[in-house]
Amino acid sequence: MTKIETVCIVHQPPKILLGMKKVRFGRGKYNGFGGKVTEGETIEQTAKRETLEEAGIEIINPEKMGELLFQFQTEEPDHLVHIFRTEEYKGIIKESEEMKPEWFYTENIPYKQMWADDEYWLPLLLEKRKFIGNFIFNRDFQIAEYKLKEIKCFD
View 1: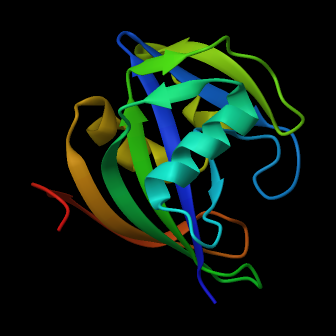
View 2 (view 1 turned 90 degrees about the horizontal axis):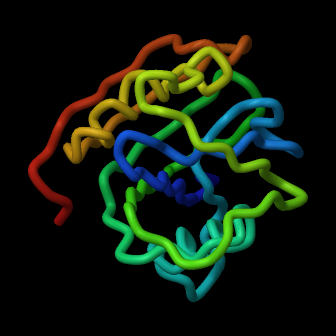
């Protein structure tokens, strides 16, 4: 069964807000804020709720930028992740039990401490270009193969 999830990137050029994952799957990696869609929730509502829970901020006008299917050559189920971007938020950024938020200048994004796929699609997001893709990870969580393409819009 495929997990349906979201990730939201707060991008205020020239900076990007990422969180260091502190627990569970992805622990020890920087990522955007997000998680699993719950029943009765839209993907945008999930992106808003998860960012509030993980970073303490309310995102404003999130725009869907990407849709990525992650598959693993392990017992990990597939993840279909809807990627959002926003420049605006309300509230004060704060650490949560799950994430430690941190600002980075876009020329210093810590790709070596992130999922291997991020360096492929994150530059598209930062240029406000929409994309779809599929990443297959081997047993060592390295990319075994991938497809990524830019699109004009989501249907």
